[in-house]
Image 1: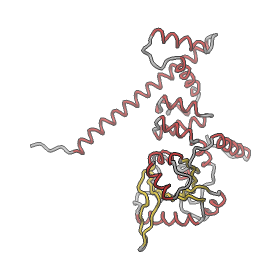
Image 2: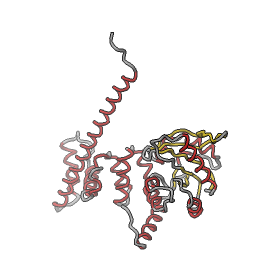
Image 3: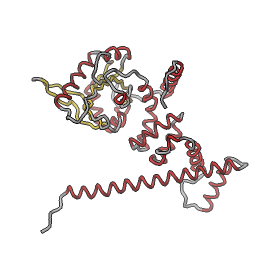
Image 4: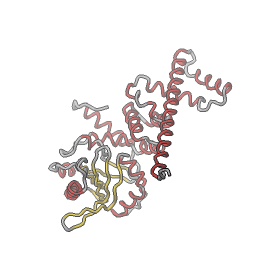
Amino acid sequence: MGTELTPTQFDEIIAIIEKAKARAIKAVNAELIQLYWNVGEYLSNLCAASNFGDKVIDEVAAYIAKSNQSLKGFNRRGLYRMRQFYETYKDDGFVTPLVTQISWTNHLLIMSGSKSAEERHFYMALCAKEHYSKRELERQIDSAYFERYMLASQKTVPEGTSEGVRASFLDTYVLEFLDLPQQYSEHNLRKAIIENLKQFILEFGKDFTFVGDEYRIQVGGQDFYIDLLFYNRALSCLVPIELKIGKFKPEHVGQINFYMEALDRDVKKPNENPSVGVILCAGKDDAVVEYALSRSMSPTLVSDYTLCLPNKKLLQDKLRELTELALENGETVED
């Protein structure tokens, strides 16, 4: 009598099928993007060589519509976008390894929503890393994720925090999806985050894996509860998050450091890195934060949050001012 098959073995078959489907979709997307690139290059060269310029594209679109109606997406608008796609990136070596990893829809969003090559590079790299859907990318652009990331990168890193850790967190988080009332408690805030965990992880980064809320740790004979506990796969560490509905206070640092010490002694595995603590508050004074963290050797970060989408124009102006100031002071501004 043969060995009886188990559900686990059936799951392995499904996994094989799903991996093959994912590879096929990726290959089709790569071919499609390469097609649009080639068409864009051809149209760009055709327009440059013609006395009629852009009108050539109108003629090509009309010819395709008349001679081959089965071709979808090659109308006037689509052909102009393909030429724009090629001309935007033809001399940009940064995009070469990324261009076929991103869907055409996301390419269009990045081109229309970015104001500089630096911003395009940022969202392309982010899409390739996080595998954003159209809706997820739209949300990140609308919430000024690029501007917030760049502003955070210009903040002074606390002595106990590495650059790698700092790069994994923002200075301000946008939690507009929580839909909280005007008056709310820390309990309401934590509950709303749990109910909208997918959006919360999108905002923090898909390397974050949820461990638990009101996570219990025991020290001596007492129980203590961490508001939110995550694990970050890229950093290989636990990330306790303390929620504060008011402004940051120096005493919050002692609380999060206590939690990190308990996690590192009793929960952290030998192959994992020390915990990174995050104090997420409704507001903060940067000077108070700097003083509070100046003598702390633990990797602790203080971020604030907003419950509505930010004014992108204000963030763009602030980023430009800081960049110009850095250049005036002879500092190097990273691409």
